[in-house]
Length: 193
Image 1: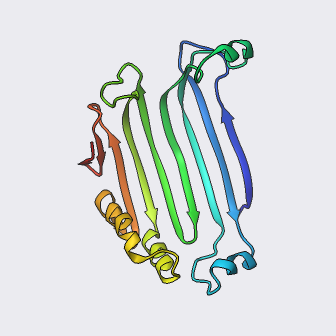
Image 2: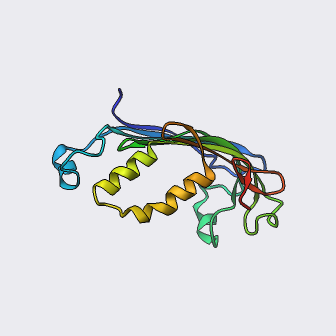
């Protein structure tokens, strides 16, 4: 197993263009560990899994840059953020794994910058993202056993997971979050908005 920080790639168009240009942001932090002396401060009985933690993401897409980001004189005269719009985003890989739980996501969204009415204040998105969550219930049970969180405080998160995720295995949940062409937000086909 590889340990360390892979700086990955950061590619973003710096020059102004009327046409959409590729961008990418990718990095990974793998094999993150803590010394047992630190673990023992809050988990002396060793109830939490102490496997190395990983954080990885890889996002790609298309964006339209309305200003030359290297023209510092123009940028200094601007009020507000530069006119950069994201037209498409693809989550190639998103993974967070720690203390026995793992969350992953993958999917794609497009954004219609001519429609700010469907979802007020933002360009209308369309697409779907699949989110998988493994080991969340076991982690919550352990946190209750350790006395970190009262059981009643986890009732709402458990209820939300039950409403918006589908069991796909033992302590494995999956949710497909979709925004359709009318701007309706759906979780596993159930309309949220």
